[in-house]
Image 1 (cartoon, rainbow, N blue to C red):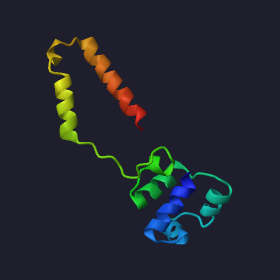
Image 2 (spheres, one colour):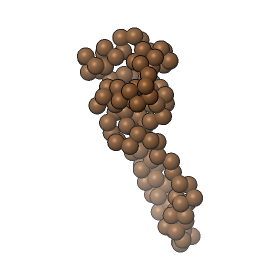
Image 3 (tube, rainbow, N blue to C red):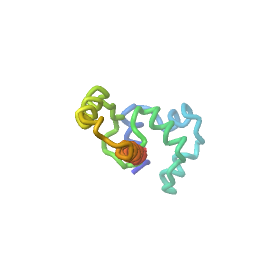
Length: 111
């Protein structure tokens, strides 16, 4: 999945494999490894490629079909949270701690 997406992005940008490798300071045998050996580069390289093409690393790795980074609508999120906690003053400290712990868990799952 990785190599297919990189090749697609190269074609869409109308650049060569060599141009990508040169601009990202990657070894000239990188494509041979990725195509013929089926290897996937390390996280730093995947991140560089994602940044170069302005796509997510999840897209490159086939974890998502949406290439665009998702932007949070912060005002909407804040509104949803405030509605959810209209009676926040009625929560015990233990309940607040559980909410914080669960929030951290949810955020860790998205990384």
